[in-house]
Length: 115
Length: 110
Image 1 (spheres, one colour):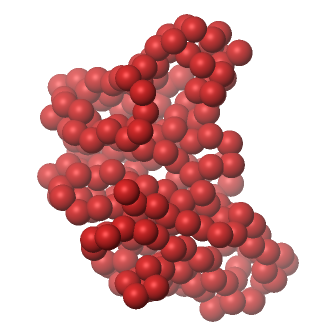
Image 2 (cartoon, rainbow over the protein chains, first blue to last red):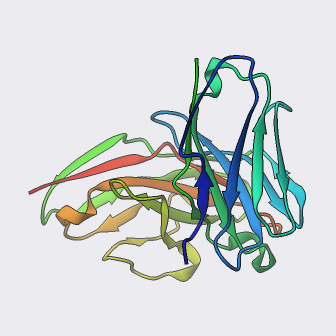
């Protein structure tokens, strides 16, 4: 079991561009959450997808959007990139059916640098 | 809104010494608390959760609702415990929005 996989591992974009990050959940998991981790900070919740719908959202602008596919994989899209979007983006999968407390399984993250 | 506070960015202890990583939270209801750990060059992973009330790798954590704390403890630190530790909170309601603290780096000195 490969666990949660994310691609790409690193990405460099220019301010104003758009970016798409991808995540495949751990086998058997149906829920995907995305987190942003700035340097020296803990992961900040962006949003969560379950049954192909956004179920919860953190305090992030509409420039951040996502999608979940029927095979439970997910994408995170960020439009009009700002320098402040530079961070490690983590994907975490879990079992939605187990209620609020299914532990998160994290990927290795995508390091996004905006210049 | 919920918040998790980890007051120490860095905690250095000698091998064999007791360890206590502090975590305080703010939430008006009954949250579930977790400790996640990230070892060097590894992904973030769950260490323990308060509802399990178990000891993992010698670590324990007790939820103190009166003090709104969930401190992580280990009686004798080992070098392999050196890692980044994050306290996290999940709120009830069927959704898994997890709020993380800023993390504490534990450095065990041989």
